[in-house]
Length: 218
Image (cartoon, rainbow, N blue to C red; front, side, top):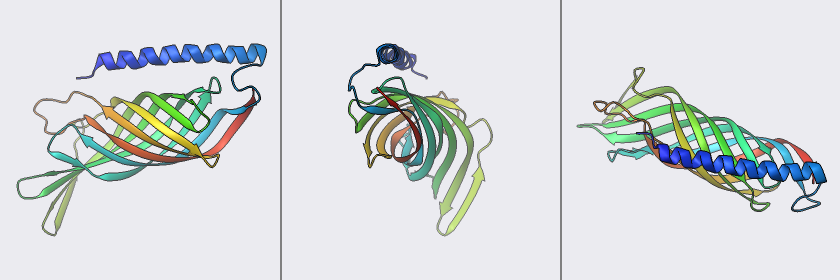
């Protein structure tokens, strides 16, 4: 079942940090002053990159496999240290499980839309947290035994759209590169008679390149 207490915590945190960021931005606009006077930062940044996913279900019978995804994100900074991030992610999820006399594998594909609050405590380090909407595209089941493989697409309604949460820690290097690690989890109720689950959790490693930005002097 979806955890409303966690959702309320993230929303409250986001709103409070947003209010703080707007206050700092007003100081910059009104007085052209702020922390780190004389430094520059990018008000808008557009970047894209790749993600390595190791995401599993909440079932004890499944084991995650590695998949490769991609993303395009845009970040807007309210101040030098706080920004809001959104964009589009392509997130494939794959895991294996044992059947009676064979090996099964599910391959699921999602298009995700994140909404993160990103904090930059230093010039190199960034911390992010927020929610993500996952739009299910399609799912495939592959059954292997001996030298034979058979695949079939899942019927509509077994896997569905969902909401999840992500926390991220990252490091900026060589000016335009950003490497990070995510921990993500998704909770969504599935029918009790259904063997498959929409609940997933796991780790993502990512590397992005900044294609465009706009600089603002404090």
